Image (cartoon, rainbow, N blue to C red):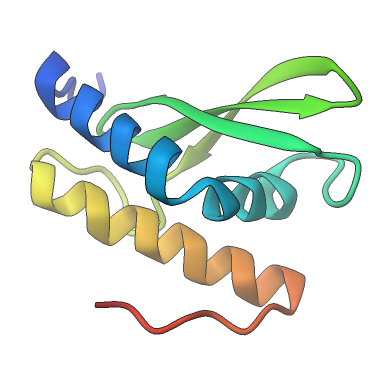
Length: 104
């Protein structure tokens, strides 16, 4: 059973991802969705648990849910969420041939 994070943790992470990292959401969706790539025109992070992040993705107005497992395996701590989202971003850049920006 995956770890469930408190609602305030989920709300804060989603606010940050959907407010400050909209391009990263799209990049992750394009890298991990099947079939991948350009057909995806929108992506919003809608949740996460200890095993994966979840995005609502859109292809020409049709939406679906994309669940992407954390690259480092299951997590249980809030601080681990950032590490795993950054890891997903890095893998997405590699898959799509995009130069990743430096991480703070």
